[in-house]
Length: 172
Image 1 (cartoon, rainbow, N blue to C red):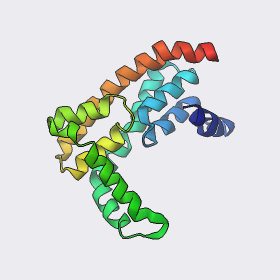
Image 2: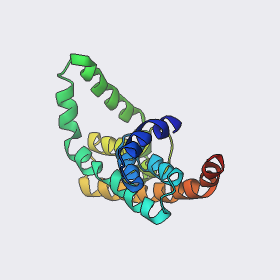
Image 3: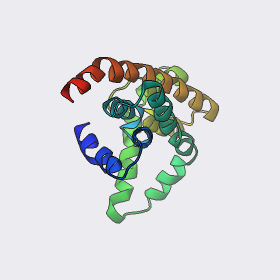
Image 4: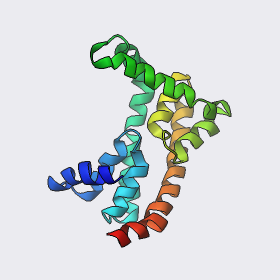
């Protein structure tokens, strides 16, 4: 998280981007998502309720695009051998397949927990990829991911503005 704060966040701050919009942007980044957005919000001292709204919005925006278009994008990427884009597409599919056990335990609950429990490699981006690759119906996938985002928001708000928030502000 230090690299994110020292790199991207400082660049955005240097360009006079408001802290709430920085949190929004960070929440849109794959693998970092809402979890990182809420941590950055706490570090930048964005009021909690404002941070929650902006981070959820930033994390939600990519979901429908991933669900609707990722299969076509991956198929297209597999035909591009320049810069090993085809290998990256295969890596994404393999990563989703390795994480598919969460979905096998019940599509809705599995997807919700996969998106909602903040562990490395989980979140809305990977959850959307998995839902699309495993043909989970769009309404079910969206609802499960929204429930997962609520769960992740609760967990990360408590951590970012509670336990970790105190540490961040102490370290300064």
